[in-house]
Length: 139
Image (cartoon, rainbow, N blue to C red; front, side, top):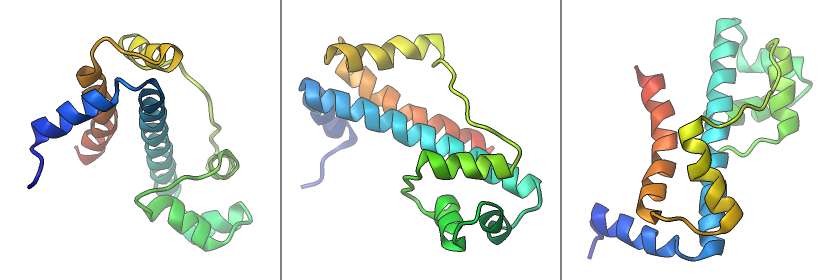
């Protein structure tokens, strides 16, 4: 029997009542969205600079496979060192920025307190963080 989308959200909301699961879910959701944003922006900068992936690999003294995986693997988990090196080769650097005000409380409170008032809303918000960027890239 296949779970319906509503069943999925109900089950996830119930799982988010566990403080450890909640924290891990929020951390991973933010990590994935952040990495996707970084990699997409770096790839756009690479293309705008007219660099091939092999050119970029040479610039950072890395194996070409490292750069190919960075820009083509579905589930990437690059090191900050790799991201910073690629950024530098593209004339960029990494910086931190605060989350937008409406999002800040929704993300930081569950991490700090291990609980959330509306777990279903948090689950949907975490999913939407990734979808917003994908939608922006598609348009």
